[in-house]
Image 1 (cartoon, rainbow, N blue to C red):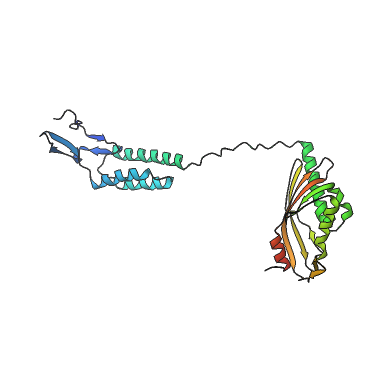
Image 2 (cartoon, rainbow, N blue to C red):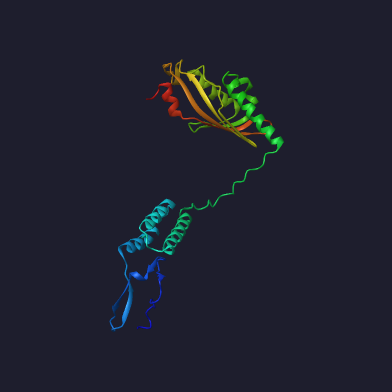
Length: 269
């Protein structure tokens, strides 16, 4: 007998590199090149399928894929195989499922925890609520009622306003001039809903709904006008505002979709 060959005689079964149990009934002896008798394992079609399945699992990243593979392997297990073989398959499947979970798990966000909210004190909460109350009054009463004399309750004298079309103005007088232009062609323009209101420290973010009817001629310059279409509009908008210690805004960002606004007015299709 070749001293370098693994001894198999007398073993009832042994485990190969794949972790599967190989029964002695699947072995046979054959002469080697030097005349010695070599014991080899017969590999059945069932075992080939099992071994091939193991290497396929290396490409699996979903737990259910590995579970289905395990069930298929157990289904191919001969009733005459030992309980030890079934346990071996099961343990291998559990290990592969655990490995697949580790592979499929999303990597952690490297920036997690870098944005830590500052706790709001009782005084800050009162101030934030006051800012939202002032903004409600601005839209529901001052803007909708064109009560420009009271715009100073919400806007500082040198307020900076960023408009949806990209232009920026400075000063409350210029802002009033721009606001008045919205009412020339739609005198019933109004904002009576604030479905979302958020306040944090010196900032507020409010979503509103602007409504109205294109019922009057719209001036476009050089003495020209666009005739009214009498179409109604209902436009979602948002305002982000920075508040001063005096309780009014010194900067305001207005957002709405001008294309949707023009389409609802009937200016474009």
